[in-house]
Image (tube, rainbow, N blue to C red; front, top):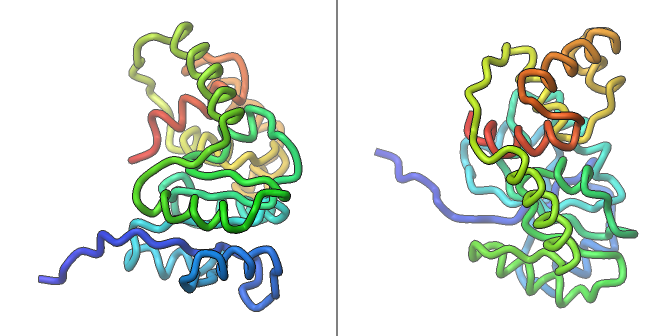
Length: 216
């Protein structure tokens, strides 16, 4: 019987793994270990071989990468994510859409600190800035106070697909394009989803999905 691979490995998820990236090179040098580069399509090939993948993503390309991930038959939030090169403080909705976010680093952060954080994340720890932790804690406390218990929700397969698209931070137009439906149909699905989940907006729907769709 083949031995299951439980190793935790960091991969740099890129739009083009052949394109040079000075920021990534500096992080890799400080990490003192090769960080393999993979493109979005490689996730389908690498996924069965390395189920405990940690994705290192340059924030400048994050939205474009996640839009491409959304078109693949995989759950993007199954992977732990480290985002670097962030230019400014992110709004809560964007943080929630990042799913299993384990580390976040700003453009001016020292590359040695980023490398040290990556090693901690490989060991199973979280390395998020204090302001991000406070931001998320405040949000989830609000969610828990308004939704103290889990509710059994009967979502259609299409509604689950739409929810997963929301988790990537995709706009209505991007969702419509990915699923070959109109924006009007997307809005109709969102209305039904919000109603079934008893939530008021996309942020709350994403938070529900992050709690309940991780292993589905």
